[in-house]
Image (tube, rainbow, N blue to C red; front, top):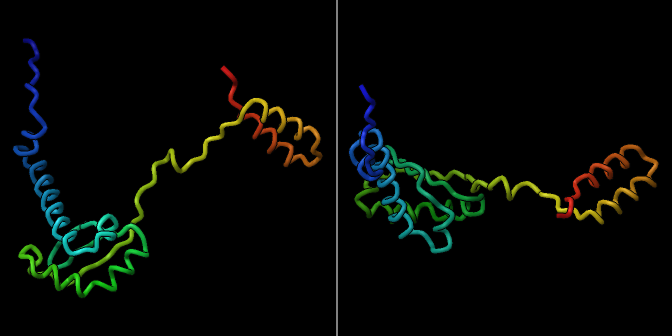
Length: 151
Protein backbone atom coordinates (compact mmCIF):
# COMPACT_ATOMS: atom_id res chain seq x y z
CA UNK A 1 0.00 0.00 0.00
CA UNK A 2 1.57 3.26 -1.12
CA UNK A 3 1.39 6.50 0.81
CA UNK A 4 -0.58 9.20 -0.97
CA UNK A 5 0.04 12.70 0.43
CA UNK A 6 -2.86 15.08 0.77
CA UNK A 7 -3.17 17.63 -1.96
CA UNK A 8 -1.81 21.03 -1.04
CA UNK A 9 -4.30 23.80 -0.43
CA UNK A 10 -3.79 27.49 -0.89
CA UNK A 11 -2.99 29.44 2.30
CA UNK A 12 -6.06 31.63 1.81
CA UNK A 13 -8.28 28.52 1.76
CA UNK A 14 -6.65 27.20 4.94
CA UNK A 15 -7.19 30.52 6.70
CA UNK A 16 -10.88 30.53 5.79
CA UNK A 17 -11.62 26.87 6.59
CA UNK A 18 -9.45 25.72 9.52
CA UNK A 19 -11.26 26.76 12.70
CA UNK A 20 -8.25 27.86 14.82
CA UNK A 21 -6.73 29.73 11.89
CA UNK A 22 -10.10 31.21 11.01
CA UNK A 23 -10.44 32.59 14.55
CA UNK A 24 -6.94 34.07 14.46
CA UNK A 25 -7.56 35.63 11.06
CA UNK A 26 -10.88 37.08 12.24
CA UNK A 27 -9.24 38.59 15.32
CA UNK A 28 -6.42 40.08 13.22
CA UNK A 29 -8.91 41.58 10.77
CA UNK A 30 -10.93 43.04 13.66
CA UNK A 31 -7.82 44.65 15.17
CA UNK A 32 -6.83 46.02 11.74
CA UNK A 33 -10.30 47.57 11.38
CA UNK A 34 -10.07 49.12 14.86
CA UNK A 35 -6.59 50.42 13.98
CA UNK A 36 -7.97 52.16 10.88
CA UNK A 37 -10.74 53.76 12.95
CA UNK A 38 -8.22 54.89 15.58
CA UNK A 39 -5.95 56.40 12.93
CA UNK A 40 -8.79 58.59 11.66
CA UNK A 41 -8.86 60.27 15.07
CA UNK A 42 -5.11 60.57 15.67
CA UNK A 43 -2.88 63.38 14.51
CA UNK A 44 -0.93 62.34 11.40
CA UNK A 45 2.39 62.41 13.25
CA UNK A 46 1.09 60.06 15.97
CA UNK A 47 -0.30 57.40 13.65
CA UNK A 48 2.93 55.47 13.17
CA UNK A 49 3.62 55.48 16.93
CA UNK A 50 0.30 54.12 18.19
CA UNK A 51 -1.21 50.67 17.54
CA UNK A 52 -4.25 48.82 18.84
CA UNK A 53 -3.19 45.86 20.98
CA UNK A 54 -6.54 44.72 22.34
CA UNK A 55 -10.17 45.70 22.79
CA UNK A 56 -12.02 43.90 25.61
CA UNK A 57 -14.92 44.76 27.87
CA UNK A 58 -14.78 48.49 27.17
CA UNK A 59 -11.02 48.65 27.64
CA UNK A 60 -8.86 49.73 24.69
CA UNK A 61 -5.15 48.95 25.04
CA UNK A 62 -2.84 50.94 22.77
CA UNK A 63 0.84 50.19 22.24
CA UNK A 64 2.95 53.33 21.88
CA UNK A 65 6.55 53.36 20.62
CA UNK A 66 8.02 55.62 23.31
CA UNK A 67 7.26 57.63 26.43
CA UNK A 68 7.10 60.90 24.54
CA UNK A 69 4.17 59.76 22.43
CA UNK A 70 2.50 58.05 25.38
CA UNK A 71 2.54 61.35 27.29
CA UNK A 72 1.18 63.29 24.33
CA UNK A 73 -1.62 60.78 23.84
CA UNK A 74 -2.48 60.73 27.55
CA UNK A 75 -3.03 64.50 27.39
CA UNK A 76 -5.43 63.90 24.50
CA UNK A 77 -7.08 60.85 26.06
CA UNK A 78 -10.46 62.42 26.92
CA UNK A 79 -10.84 63.94 23.45
CA UNK A 80 -9.81 60.70 21.80
CA UNK A 81 -12.25 58.69 23.91
CA UNK A 82 -15.11 61.08 23.06
CA UNK A 83 -14.35 60.81 19.35
CA UNK A 84 -14.03 57.02 19.40
CA UNK A 85 -17.37 56.67 21.20
CA UNK A 86 -19.03 58.00 18.04
CA UNK A 87 -18.10 54.75 16.23
CA UNK A 88 -20.40 51.78 16.83
CA UNK A 89 -17.33 49.52 17.26
CA UNK A 90 -16.29 51.57 20.30
CA UNK A 91 -19.82 52.09 21.67
CA UNK A 92 -18.95 50.63 25.10
CA UNK A 93 -15.53 52.27 25.45
CA UNK A 94 -14.91 53.13 29.11
CA UNK A 95 -11.12 53.27 29.34
CA UNK A 96 -8.06 53.78 27.15
CA UNK A 97 -4.75 52.42 28.38
CA UNK A 98 -1.34 53.19 26.90
CA UNK A 99 1.56 50.80 27.11
CA UNK A 100 5.03 51.83 25.98
CA UNK A 101 6.77 49.17 23.91
CA UNK A 102 9.74 50.32 21.82
CA UNK A 103 10.05 48.75 18.39
CA UNK A 104 12.30 45.73 18.30
CA UNK A 105 15.79 46.36 16.96
CA UNK A 106 17.26 43.81 14.61
CA UNK A 107 20.27 42.05 16.09
CA UNK A 108 22.53 42.92 13.16
CA UNK A 109 21.95 46.63 13.75
CA UNK A 110 22.55 46.28 17.49
CA UNK A 111 25.98 44.67 17.30
CA UNK A 112 29.08 46.37 15.98
CA UNK A 113 31.17 44.62 13.41
CA UNK A 114 34.84 45.37 13.30
CA UNK A 115 36.25 46.01 9.85
CA UNK A 116 39.94 46.33 10.48
CA UNK A 117 42.46 46.43 7.66
CA UNK A 118 45.62 44.37 7.92
CA UNK A 119 47.70 47.55 7.96
CA UNK A 120 45.71 48.94 10.91
CA UNK A 121 46.11 45.59 12.68
CA UNK A 122 49.90 45.72 12.17
CA UNK A 123 50.00 49.25 13.63
CA UNK A 124 47.94 48.19 16.67
CA UNK A 125 50.13 45.09 17.16
CA UNK A 126 53.30 47.24 16.99
CA UNK A 127 51.78 49.61 19.55
CA UNK A 128 50.90 46.66 21.81
CA UNK A 129 54.52 45.48 21.78
CA UNK A 130 55.62 48.78 23.29
CA UNK A 131 53.06 48.69 26.16
CA UNK A 132 54.19 47.52 29.59
CA UNK A 133 50.70 47.18 31.13
CA UNK A 134 49.70 43.53 30.54
CA UNK A 135 45.93 44.19 30.47
CA UNK A 136 46.20 46.99 27.93
CA UNK A 137 48.66 44.99 25.87
CA UNK A 138 46.31 41.97 25.79
CA UNK A 139 43.37 44.20 24.80
CA UNK A 140 45.34 45.72 21.91
CA UNK A 141 46.44 42.27 20.75
CA UNK A 142 42.82 41.05 20.79
CA UNK A 143 41.81 44.11 18.77
CA UNK A 144 44.60 43.47 16.24
CA UNK A 145 43.41 39.87 15.84
CA UNK A 146 40.14 41.11 14.30
CA UNK A 147 41.87 42.11 11.06
CA UNK A 148 40.30 40.77 7.89
CA UNK A 149 42.77 38.98 5.63
CA UNK A 150 43.03 40.48 2.15
CA UNK A 151 41.69 38.37 -0.69
